[in-house]
Length: 126
Image (cartoon, rainbow, N blue to C red; front, side, top):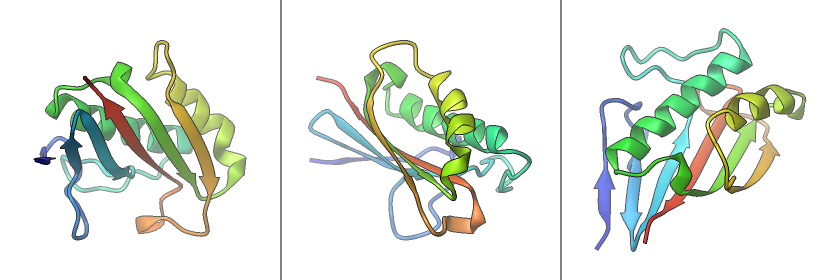
């Protein structure tokens, strides 16, 4: 049986999906964009701050599900343009200590609410 994860410490879904789902020890997080869950504001001040907000949203969902960044096995990073990669990668990397997850980074034509970065995560606990 799947368990739906929801928290007010991450942005509410803007469509017909759950913030996260646990299935057989896997935690699947929906893509997170830089929305401040306290006020619903989209963060656009810099790509670094956008990325930090995305990672804070991910952390909130991991905590709500009783997981942490050490449990993350796979991430997908979506960027509005590949020239942002180095800045996003530096911020992203600061949230992991070791045993880095598998990852791909993809430049896309557009992201929800006109943001520059979206990250989805899969974590696992046995």
